[in-house]
Length: 64
Image (cartoon, rainbow, N blue to C red):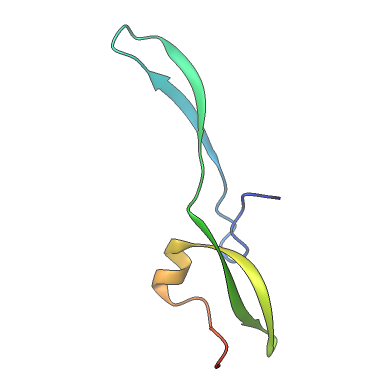
């Protein structure tokens, strides 16, 4: 399962943990993805969307 937002394409970012002794170990930061049901071309589909896209209103939720 990919860790990429279906709308904006945001994905993992790499970097280092840095301890007080200045030891560097590699790590990854993952986007906060949520599985939501959204309308795509008028049809409801499940998408993996980051919370930034949800909050900004880029997702149209289907009417229940």
